[in-house]
Image (cartoon, rainbow, N blue to C red; front, side):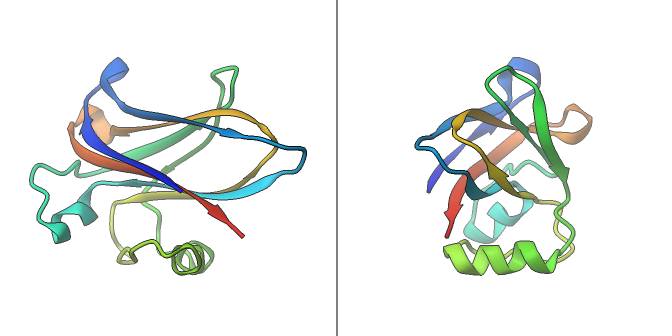
Length: 126
């Protein structure tokens, strides 16, 4: 897995991370954009409503999420990869995707151009 925590601004200042899926087969990934849940770890100034967007190598958005919603499939993936749990009503974001080999970028920005500290996490789900 990979993760990055930093200030997420607006526009080009959004928190962004890139990753590569190598090989010949598709991979299932859990991708999370965490803001509000950071406060339980003593992080001040957390991004209140993170929006997570996944882009392919052409810069086309292929997935987005705002407020993960307590999905049973996502909660099971959190446990499977060892990610800390999120409350079902949290405004944190998450995607469970299966992607072919290639280059990808994920960004976290605030809903309504808000800013704050955010965490991007990318986990391989096996």
